[in-house]
Structure formats: structure tokens, C-alpha cells
Length: 271
Image 1 (cartoon, rainbow, N blue to C red):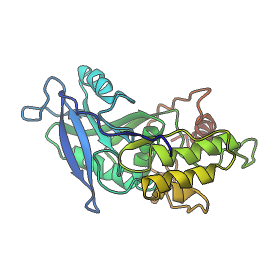
Image 2: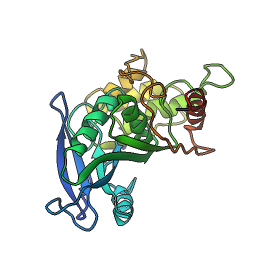
Image 3: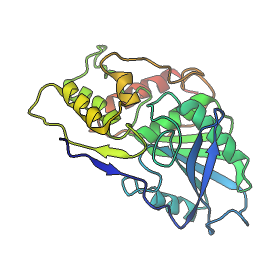
Image 4: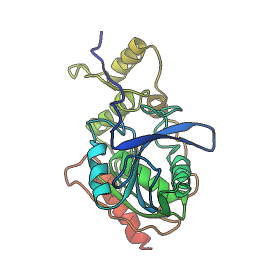
């Protein structure tokens, strides 16, 4: 029997007010709105908004988004922190990558219609919530004025290529396979430790899913028979509308090779 730690949504910040953002397919995503000087929108004045779309709990301690939001609001920004589809308080299926373009577009569109928005949106965040920024850029929404993706890559989950090869080390694939069995399995985060003395990781993954009583869509997307669902349906994020990017790379980060691959793409598309 595996020891599984389930982490549910943390209490929402008293400095924010909760919202539900309905998408084009009827799915409702949960968000927290932080405004400068006030916790509600009654007397809000329009201004620039920073959007953070993440799968790690918009209210949780892991990414301390409430503290980040407080910093931004002190500098005059409005902040929307949102649980992505299928995570924590948001509806829908927890499926990696493939919904973020349209969900990002619809969220930005919702922001532009609020009385506290001046129609200008920027995005910020690390890792998967850096990826959601690239996806929003690929959506082509005109209100997105800048993104700041950190320690991430547009091809998260794909083979890491070195010197023109498609080889990926087994340890890196281990990270790829564990992620949808922990962070992207269902609404809550499910943390468990494999028995690293056993070589057959897939068997342990099956034991985990058997114990939980359901399969994981994101895991089945990658292993053992990958389904390459299109993640950028509107086209390559580097080939569409120009969006200024502050692109930050962690030298020892597990996403560094993917980040550098994005730098090569930026060089090819300087606009």
C-alpha cells in the first residue's frame, strides 16, 4: 500500500475576492482577484492587470501566490490568480498542456470586461505557469501586452534534445511520468514516493492508480502509448502576434534545455 499525501485547496486570501470565469465550452475556472487598496471591486478604478494561471493552487503555500499578488498590488497592479482547468477549485479534466491556449484567451477576454481593467494584461510565473503564458501568447489575444515566463519551455513534456538528437535521459523521463501522477492527476495534488529500488516504474504507476481507483488522463497521454494532442491549435507561439517577453532560465533547472530551445526560436523570430 502506497503512502499518498493528498493536498487540497488552501483558504483563499482575505485580500482577494473569488470569481468564477466561464469558458467557451461551459467549464468554470476559479480565480482570485486582488485590487490595489481594496479587497473588492465596488470602487475599483481601471488599471493594468497581471494574470497568473497555475496548477499548484492559487491560494496555496507551495507557490505563495497571495504574497506575490500583494507585492504587485502595492505597485499599482490588479492581479488575477487562477487554478487551471481540472485543478483545485476549477472544473474540467486535469489534462496537461492542450487546453491552455483557449483557456488563456477566454480568461484574458473576461479580464478586459471587468470595471477594474483598462484592457491591458501581462502574465508572470514559473514552470507550468510559465508555459500557460506561452499558450496565451499563442492565442493571439490583443490585450496581452507582455509575458514573463521563468524556468519553463514551450515543449514541456517532450523529449529533451541535445546536439541535434532526441535522446532523453531516463531520470528526465522519470520526472515526466511522475508529474501527471502527482500534480496533474485530479483536482488535488497527490504526493507519493516510488520505491526507487524497483526498476519497473510503470508497474508502480499502475499500483498507484489501482489504489486511487481511477486512471489519470495526463499519464495515459504520455505512457505507454503517447497521444500527441495539439497544444497550440492557433499556431506556433513564436510565429504569431508579437508579444514582449522577459525569458528567465535557471542554469540547473530541469527545464533549462527546453528554455534554451525557446531562445533559439526567439532568435529566429525576433519580432
